[in-house]
Image 1 (spheres, rainbow, N blue to C red):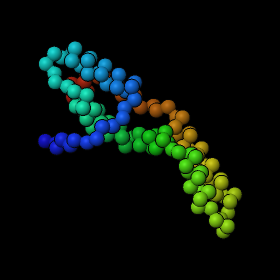
Image 2 (cartoon, rainbow, N blue to C red):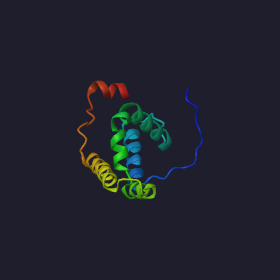
Image 3 (tube, rainbow, N blue to C red):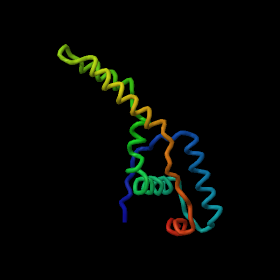
Image 4 (spheres, helix red, strand yellow):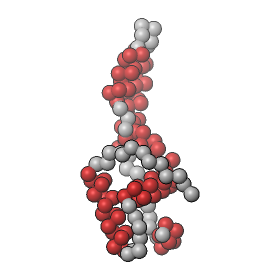
Length: 122
C-alpha cells in the first residue's frame, strides 16, 4: 500500500479545477457507489500520466517550458573574451529554434478508448 504524504497545497488554475470537478461529478453520476475526492483523482491522474505518457512527452514538456530569455542571459553571463561569439550565437539560435519547433509540433499520439482498455482502467 502506498504511503500517504501530507504536502503543501499546489496551485491549480481555475480551468483545471473546473475540469477536475467535472470529472468527479461525471464519475459519481455514472457510479453511485464511488468514493472519490479531488486528491484521489489527482493522484490517479498523475500516476497514470507518469506510467503511460511521461517518458513519451518529456521532451515536449521541456520545450513547452523552455525559458529563452533566461537561456540567453546565462549565455551572456558565461561569455568571455576567449569565446567565439559567432559560433556561440549560432549554437544558441539552433537551441532556441529546436525548442520552438518541438513546442509547435502537434502530438500525433491520441489516446484511444476501446472496450478492452476501458475495462482495464475500471
